[in-house]
Every structure is written in C-alpha cells, then in structure tokens.
Length: 183
Ligand code: IMP
Ligand code: MG
Image (tube, rainbow, N blue to C red):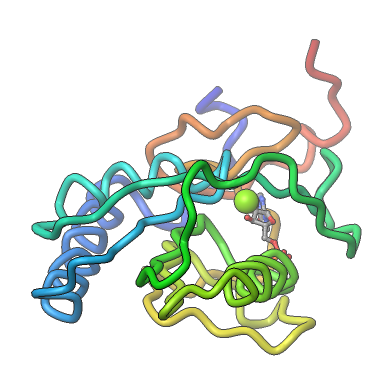
C-alpha cells in the first residue's frame, strides 16, 4: 500500500504534533464548559477524532454522523446525504464537529445547518486538513491542522475507493493507481 504513494504531504510525526497543539487550544477555549459534544464525521474523521479526543481534558460526549457527498470517485458530486444520524439530542450543547478535510465546504454547510436547526448552543469546526482552494460554499473551519494543496489526497482517514485510510500520514497517490482496479 505504501508503494502506491507518490509523495508524502505531512508525515505521522508532523500530524501528531499538530493534533497535540489543536487539543491544547481546545482545552483552553472550552475550559469549564459542561455541555460539550464532539461530533465525528464518519468515516474519514475517525482517526483524527480519536487522536484529538483522547487528548482533551474536558467533559465531552462523543457522537457520530455519516454523510456522503462523494460516491467513490475523486471529486465532489454536490449533493450531501445524511446516512447516519447522531444518537443524542444536541439542543443546548456546545458542539465541536471534527472533520478530516474541508474541500468544497458542502458537507460542513449541511451539518452546520442541520445542527443549528436542532438548537445547538454553539457549533465550531475542527478539521485536521483544509483545502481552501476547493471551496464552493462559504464555510470556514475554526480550528485547522494544516492547509493542503488542491489535489486528491489519501491517508490519515482520507480514502480512495475505501482504501488508504489507515496510512498514518497524508499523501498523494501515484497516477497509475487511478487507472488500476482494486479487487
Ligand atoms: P466537501 O463537502 O467538498 O467539503 O468534502 C468533504 C469531504 O470530502 C471530506 O470529509 C472527505 O471525506 C472528502 N474529501 C475531500 N477532499 C478529499 C481528498 O483529497 N481525498 C479524499 N477525500 C476527500
Ligand atoms: Mg468525510
């Protein structure tokens, strides 16, 4: 699997370090808050969310949503669907949405609107990666790990056709991989 990577954008150590910094910032900003919910966006944000969540010195619940905007390809389709809803009511809660990457911004716009409509007290976005050049809707992440180039990336939760999420770093696939079929 590692042989399919053309170049590494951020390595494991850089990511670990940055997650630590983000956790410190959240620990500071949310100190004393009692109604916190960390919402992980499945599936890509799992890795980041767990790395971050275990470093939070805060009384925070965790919950999960699954949305889909990509259908297995390498570019956004435009429509966002809710595939799995939160288990708990978020009315009155301070919500931190954890994402793997903000690209067009459609996924987060959809989630922010949804959670606002349900009466969340506050909603902040914490994304390990951000592709500012990909933005189509006006959404910004409050906490960002790294800005990344406007290329299709894999690893640290990001997938290509369901694979490569388990790479501990983020990188660019060799073009030959896109021509090859995985079975
Ligand atoms: P957005 O709705 O366009 O902002 O897309 C956000 C979602 O698209 C992310 O949660 C990812 O799952 C996926 N995505 C965006 N860029 C990439 C990429 O470079 N590689 C893999 N998945 C991506
Ligand atoms: Mg995602």
